[in-house]
Image 1: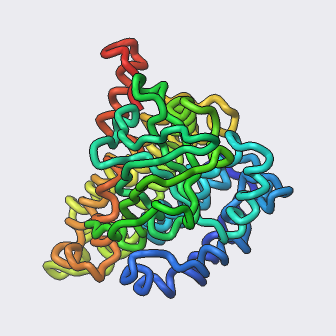
Image 2 (image 1 turned 30 degrees about the horizontal axis):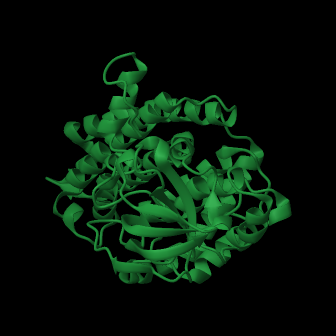
Length: 388
């Protein structure tokens, strides 16, 4: 179905991203999977293409494009190559970027943004902890004021770009008596004493992504590295989760669409009982169902995308987009594996990798259960306490 939200400039940009994927990522995909991380030179190449600072003003080396449709295009094309690419680059461009743009001082922007846009400064965000995932207000990492600095102690887990990041935005508790109101954000830099990385986590899917545990043992963070307001971190995170969830929704849907296209090509050539399996009624009906779900869902996501461009996307609609695309994506991938038969369970087949890569999308960026809770409360129902 033709998408009506893009103009020629968007389509030219899409072709540029597609060419970057074809030339830079695809030839090295097995190497990237094996090492469980994207090489620094590929980040630098992305920076040279202007992909890493789309919404960053040109004064800081960014593209100066205040239009999230370009971010969506980048995420969609990366997701078609592999969900982990959309995840790693998206954390940097869609998740961390708003914090560094909107909550920083002029000095902090001068210090970080030019390198951020160039790919010299890779970033991550440390929200999730071993005992606090969707419940962000329940995190246990602490920061205690010490003179003009802060002393940070605690741990984070499941951190995308965790091993490679040069700067991590870390959420820590600075007021032990409050839940959501007592959290502050800190920029923890690679060389800070007491900051260490644990193991590179062995995941079921998304092997291209470096995902790590982070540890903070008496890390002294200067006041100049506080991001936003002291004790205002929970509100800062809530305000920016809408964009993160929209970014996830765009990637989820593109990832599923790519797998369905691969499967359509497969069922046209794979024969059983003397004819292509795509000619059997079950195959036709199943694929008809999948492409309908994708088209209908794309229409809703595109409306959300335009609302975000127009600064009116609500957290409730972002939650709808995030959980529903994850459901559609996972159902589509399961069907694609089934249509591939035994080959769909072989790791060398793209559809098998995509199936494993998709499962986490129902968990991250707020679990689908939390998304339904947000939607339900938006209907005026349920517990009045805040959720993330």
